[in-house]
Image: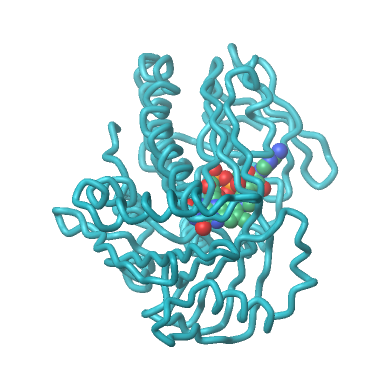
Length: 390
Ligand code: RFL
């Protein structure tokens, strides 16, 4: 097979890149190791920055998002059993929107299917060759070994993908912070309670309550790495969420059947070498943020905007100027966002062996971010997302 751009991974990064290339008349093939059903069922991020929403609108894939997305004007924080609200509206009126990552992925796949674009599911990429000449992607399709020859490769294959491993010395140019706990995430058929949303720092650890739609709640509990979600009953999960979210107001979460449970580790990770020859990494393939900042998907969108312009200039105008500065441009948005996500994580969780002094320091930091003028400015800038360079 042959194409101009071989995209590895049908997550938000790969699917959006395909759409942006499509708008420029550049041919591409997306190779995805999982099945279509698996990709559509994956529950993950849900808070979209205004820039992400606008990018999806500019790509013509935001009709449902504009109808069903839930605008998010106030963020609630609880600590020491007290509720604090912070308005999160930009000076131009821009807001965060809650709309599940699975819905973004579904809208993009529907677009590609209608346009007749090539996405090959259950096609696992095993290796990359000749990245400094004419790249060749080796993959297995239904057990058969095949190759895709292309002019450019986009590594959008997530943290565990193969693309990063094809970059010489990527490991030596990587930075990682592992947190000593995980998040248990649940999806519940329960109407989210508007008065009980956001982050709650409790002495038994963090709880987060958010909405995926008017009738679906997405909630999280800080848990040990080795927690087997099957060992916690729905009743125990709701009781723990209520305990940690309690702010003395008497409000309780609305309960309903829990339809999905999963445990995810928290880590910060950045690979600063995001390009080698005609391969560029985008999204989780290059960086991971702890979810406390709700930034993973939004960062992927920022990378992909730079990557699509890099590819357009290279393939249409034979101009490699952006290719040489790809990592540098992306990292200018990545590092501050990683820093913000880690700052949030460091202050909303209970760490093993944490002293009461350290807890008081966390309260102080949260109070600064939520209740002081400079702190609110910082929070708004970080949560609404930094402006794009490209
Ligand atoms: P993805 O979504 O991981 O997609 C990568 C795709 O590549 C495929 N793949 C391969 N395909 C072919 N051959 C191979 N060898 C391949 N290896 C991998 C994979 O099957 C997959 O389809 O990366 P992408 O596109 O960069 O998008 C990034 C976002 O998905 C990610 O940042 C967020 O979901 C992170 N994240 C969250 N972010 C938030 O902002 N808020 C959240 O609440 C939030 N919750 C989460 C999350 C990530 C989670 N994971 C990864 C454990 C909850 C979870 C459970």
